Length: 121
Image 1 (tube, one colour):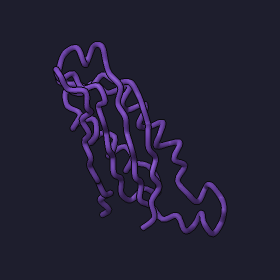
Image 2 (spheres, one colour; image 1 turned 135 degrees about the horizontal axis):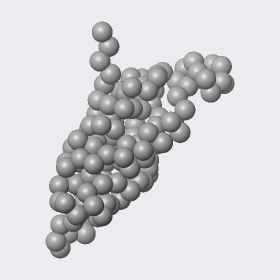
Image 3 (cartoon, one colour; image 1 turned 90 degrees about the horizontal axis):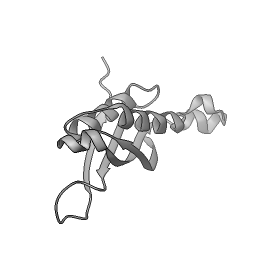
């Protein structure tokens, strides 16, 4: 199956376990891999036959900005499910990072990495 990768999506949001994370907010970074069939667009050279990844970028940013969950696990799942609701995407991998996690004496970042597949009936 074909895929499109979109990396480095950054947005400011208010998800976090600590009360100050939900008030002050923090930056989040997201990388996506979207699996879909790219062959129709490769044949037609027409954007209507492919997935417009700008839609995924905007969806990720809006989800981060508008969500206020206690856990980043909930946020990354919400992003994955919204991406799967978009037309043409069969599978998605979402890597969500907190580059400034409020942990004393820790300067690294926390990353969650999930892969979800659309459930067809």
